[in-house]
Length: 137
View 1 (spheres, rainbow, N blue to C red):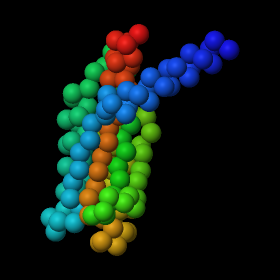
View 2 (tube, rainbow, N blue to C red):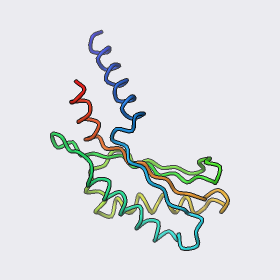
View 3 (cartoon, rainbow, N blue to C red):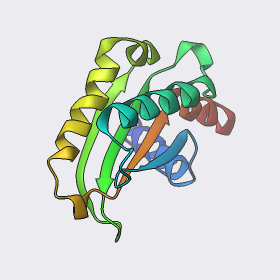
View 4 (tube, rainbow, N blue to C red):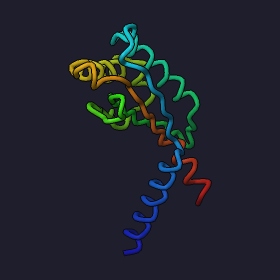
């Protein structure tokens, strides 16, 4: 009973921290521009991910991240999204990270032009969340 209560309390604290933006970094790229070809977008997203990971905390070696990418139209409606799940930062310096980003962009490219106005990304750092939870404890 006590273990279940503690788990619920921890989940609520994590949800609160995420809503507050702790450990979350966001960016966006216009996908409707003529120069926004998939290779350029993939390189821009990889560069942003690497820079964002460079700013994250790593308490006790906790350095996993989750990357979510979405493609939305001018009205903000999301038409394509992908989440990498938890990955080590090294993944984004290896073919696996580039493949995840390119795979998403390939999927987004199948959307009609009016549905792919912008690519948005959110990177969640478990290290930043763990640091905030440790400070709050």
